Image 1: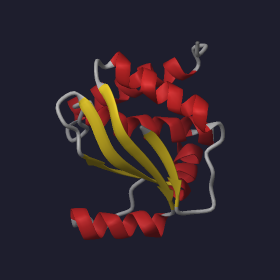
Image 2: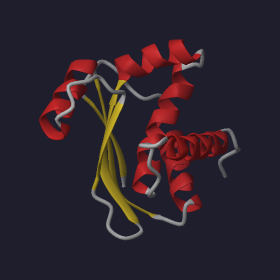
Image 3: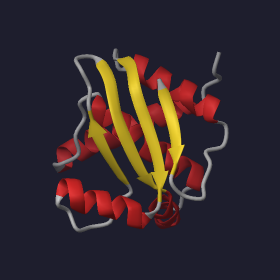
Image 4: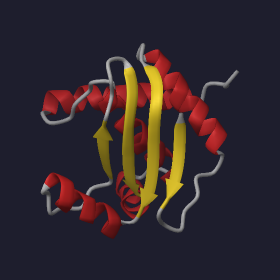
Amino acid sequence: MISFNYETQFELPNEAKIEEWIRKVIASENKREGEINYIFCNDAYLHKLNVEFLQHDTLTDIISFDNTVGNELHGDIFISIELVKENAKDFVVSFDEELRRVMIHGVLHYCGYNDKTEADQAVMTAKEDEKLSMFHVEQS
């Protein structure tokens, strides 16, 4: 089950289409959908989590807590809408595209992809691009 939760003044447009896309991404990685919770929040909310749980006193656009069991993906993905908006401007992409990239980034972590090294980052970015292209494919 994929759920969308809001801790800030934001609401995801067309939740059903995005949910179906995430399901297709999970299946494309030969994984099974478990319970995945997206929590959309602001910078302060996410910063507090970063300090409290990860001991990182920095801003970030996403924190994912992975509770995956075998091939069944489970976890909580926290996303700062404020930072996604800033990043979209910095990367000269639409807010919607940047939001989808961050959303699928969390799922890709659950699938086993990392981004700690430059080589890992290159693989992660390629996977993000691949999965973003699936969003534009007609959903049947």
